[in-house]
Length: 317
Figure 1: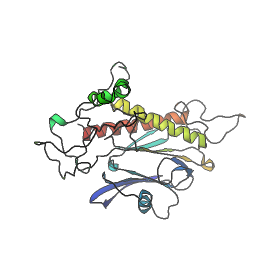
Figure 2 (figure 1 turned 135 degrees about the horizontal axis):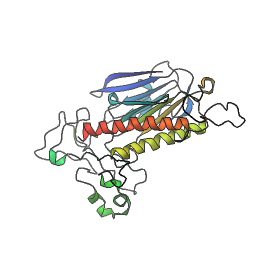
Figure 3 (figure 1 turned 180 degrees about the horizontal axis):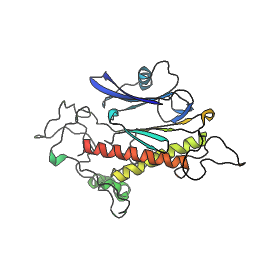
Figure 4 (figure 1 turned 30 degrees about the horizontal axis):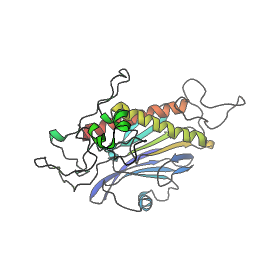
């Protein structure tokens, strides 16, 4: 399994792409547009695009960027800075996350309610020029499991602010920095380097790729996607972000096919069910309390938490 970071020039910007070359013997489950679903796959591409991406043929675009002659694979797009990817491992599981959090979202949100932006969307996404101090967003207060009484400082994390307020009052629960719509710089603001017109969004997608060195059943693969999502959300809450993710997140979990199953590996307990006392083959479970599911959860949690903190320091610090 080989991971390569590359660059290309497109739409006037230098954009990064991360390519994982798995080769034969792998099955994947993914929510990505290219190669999504469940099946044998040989590679995963996570390609950065400009924040004002407007192509209406993303599948064709991904096919153009994909490695030629490498067989079927998975292709994802993101406006996040791919070269700031974060990698984490746990017990043989590898996880890579690219994290953009301009517009974190709650999965269940009142109909018609706009998602507030944590980073006003007028700066060039390649440079992210600074805001004046009076308009700079607050850095999130991390969640501390040892202090459950102390919630992160984003008002939107309080359910009353999200669900109980009357429509006219909802925006009042957000600090001024959490604007629900892009706005142009106010007079006196320091102009961002290479500033773009209002409406050019900053990055806001979380893409996660996970590799597991054992085989999973289809059901366990689906369970693993749930585990990845739960671990991602846990990391965002702990980092102080008001949401369960972003509206454009993508996931890919790669496992060995049944012919290359590596066994349960280290750790205590039984990694897969054995109905007759023998080797039951592929893992039957991918939840966070199964051996491999727990490893997936820990690796994803570490990668997303580190990515969220990095995004905060870069864009909200």
